[in-house]
Image 1 (cartoon, rainbow, N blue to C red):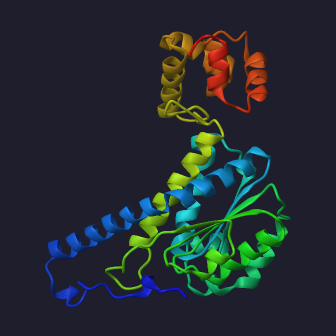
Image 2 (image 1 turned 135 degrees about the vertical axis):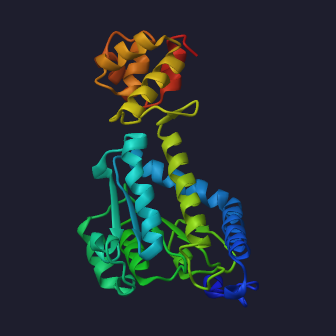
Length: 299
């Protein structure tokens, strides 16, 4: 039985509008902080979800997000940042958003109840055992993401559920059940606040650990970053220089040889003969830099 904490009234919200600006904002800030603290308890399931997602992408599958409303915005923000930050191909990331992309201009409540639309969208993906679907819903019982999860489960895909109510129906349907037990919202039911904050943190953690397990992070550096602006080109140069232990000029030369790809540039700067050898070494080691660098005597 779901306790629907996401709909409860906050104990200190009575007479809220009579309080001063600073009192109201302090209460809102405290609510956000308390929501963030709740994520710690979900770490084991977040880890489980991250490894399911990494396995899916590592096996050539897709990572699919399904959500509605504010939860959909959290999912979309996470999904959109993966290609640039970690070099994950756009065609490997899918977002099923209730109401479609039109919801980004006019976010209405009705589409979150449209289970048939979710089912149709999920079925159109022809999901399989190599895919992984993440459903995000504060209540844990929103029809749209639940319908998508049911389709994914039937297709044999891995499933992850993120919700903010203990005992949510979603958790009975997924392989990794991430419960973010956030306290009552200062504005009752306004889950864009504390619940949304906790969801964003959990998604950040999940996708970051996933990227680490896929070899897209080395010693805290994003070694699959897509350097498509001046700031990121400078960052890429600094990453190559730091990991390969070379100066900026040699790092720039290696990046030029690899057409801007950071991992191959690191290997070229570390002694690989060129991009062909660097790419072959990465394929042989599932994209992991550390064993290659160790064999080169660099680490």
